[in-house]
Length: 280
Image (cartoon, rainbow, N blue to C red; front, side):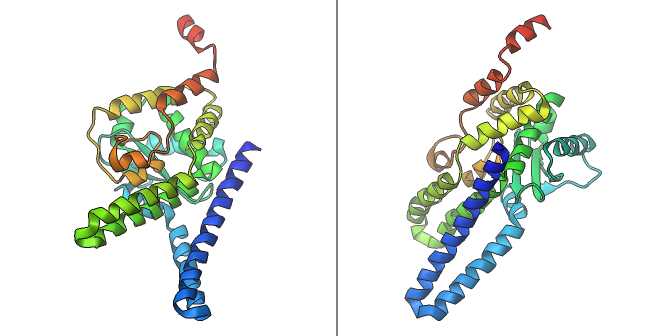
């Protein structure tokens, strides 16, 4: 029931966004040239929305520099994702790779039937099997809840807004001062930190334990501090753990709750974990 409600909320957000964008374009067209131009602007908005929708994952993962893995590459990752996707009742996502050493995972796409998942070489090198499963299950929970659709739309559109400041020439910095907060407000309007807590809980159910994901979150945060990373901060919602320093422009786009709080909630799903650890 909770999954169905989350998916319905995300679909509603997507429809409201489409209606809002097309309505805004229609008003602009009406003001410039009456009904005919308004109709043309609305049709243009629908065509652009359709193009973005059908290429959501490719657009988002292209922004972060991931390349698609061939079916024969990373067989352990391929088999693990296939098995967890069956448990989560979603289609197996297309798999992508970040070639660098920063430990991170990202997901993008339209929902349970069409999605993509990207992992970094650094992530694969440091995760234990249980930790790997926990993080992958977390991202598959986003796919099942259709969080992946709203966060991908938010990233693509916010990225377009921020990048449009580059056409400003000598006023580029001033444009960024205006468009950056607008893009950040748009992202926060669509995305709530509660989606991460819900995906964490769903991952614990899929893996039948919350501890793999809890350990992975701590490891990713600690290891990430040791590896240099740079990228567009508008892509922050795509990742399992925020890889950006929370300052300046990057601080505006933080949508993830603190890792410590996520780990605390995961441990509370198995309150006797300390006693079990001592007994082991």
